[in-house]
Image (cartoon, rainbow, N blue to C red):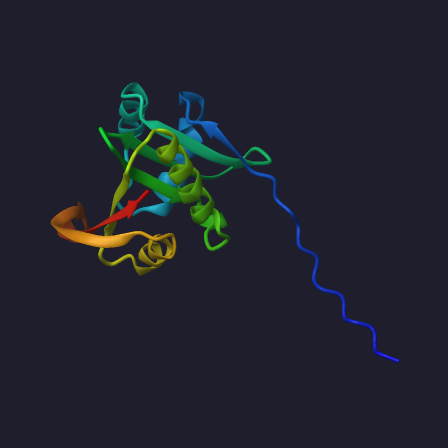
Length: 161
């Protein structure tokens, strides 16, 4: 007689939804942004993105902000300007969820390409992008501000849609 299988640990399902970024969410977004980055976007950056009509989506579950992205539509391309997962939710696959949503939206906009920049010294993000099919196509020297008044290079990555 086979021995009983040990029970698997309980996995709690999380139901998340995308909602458009609005000024009501800016305090929550700024808390995440400043906790996630040494050189965060300012509130004015987010307000400018909203005024410009950029695609700005929040990923929310149970009233908690899991992450967000901001993307700019071009003629035949979409440029990802900011994608952030709240530190408490990193490593759980939420970046992939947001990148999938961005790809679906961009395809619906009839974009041919998705573009982004990523810090050279951010291998974790680079791994996520590469797993989603993005490929390095260039380098922007001294693109990002860094500690001590220094600058850091950015890899330019793209995804053919």
